[in-house]
Image (cartoon, rainbow, N blue to C red; front, side, top):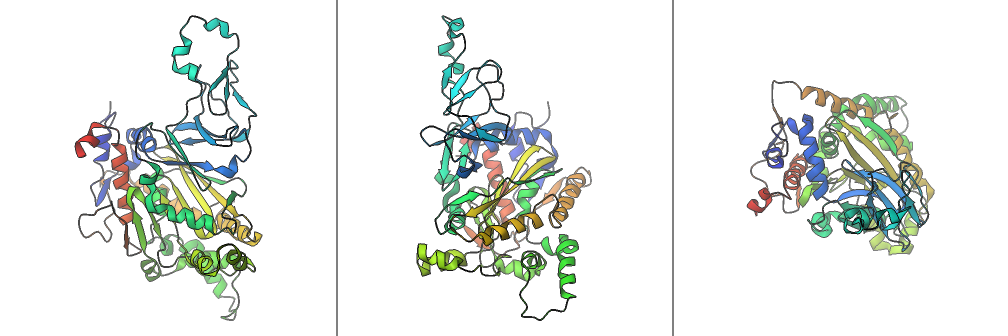
Length: 446
């Protein structure tokens, strides 16, 4: 037994306000505790309603290390079920998504279940007569997760049967999701194609932290974005010449420190936060003909302008997703091991908006987040260098105290300098609390 085995309080103590112990990134026992406590007690993104539009449609994914199925029930509601048969534990579905019809059927012994998980039928059920099966959990069918919420098409779930409510967990941070959805003249989004998938040999928290790390773009991305900007400048085009869409996307990565300082960072309780309070790398994209007019038709000029003037950069929803409202993108950081993370990058279509917006979003995803990206590889190299470097015994702690001047209260919304590391500290504060949410340590703290 290791020093953290079965001891979430000991793991939570690895965060000390201004620093975190390297074990939060490299220790397999800490990783297992995260899966058991953090990902069980927090509200975790599952999928989008447009991925299961018809009755019987399902989407197989995971919450932490737990395999789950998002499925559209016969009533039209979306349910989230554990992806295992209550008989022998066999996975019910192995395809990523499909349509199961009116019921799920286990491929091992043909137990079948309604799309809300309830047991439907058992072959030769007379073999269970007088055995007491009806008194067991197996007779109840496929187990549903503790709680599910469909928020404007985004499906979130909490594995734990009891815990923090959806409203208390997210609070005002939902304003970023609202802005992304409201950019559709119809107020609806649809997933546009499958995600780009990219394996990273590093801890999942490194990727989450990086989403609000504004001191790295002009350094880490100099080799990619910096080279692109240099080559473009060598063309000596007139100053008023329109920039190609690719340059509009990549050039802002080389903005100076002052740009990122002035953009601001907002943090909300429970580990949520966003960069780009005042402006962002998405602020100066070219207008798409006809789009604003469609927005005005739907919302009126004043509200349409307010929606489109909000150009938040990256919004992190603890524990493991990031959204970009201005370009309708969501990235989910799927933890596989202490040193292995799968990243899936989704883009969304704004219903009733010009197709050029989806094309720009797809271009951004390919250029920045794809396995073939010229920018994403910069980050990947830094993550893997950090994962390897943390194995070195010279120092045991990782510093996250930039612009921290004293004790911090993460229970309230705060806006600070855009290069602060407060959002990283905010994430670890939530990490430590949800690590011990369902333990006596929580009761003692209260």
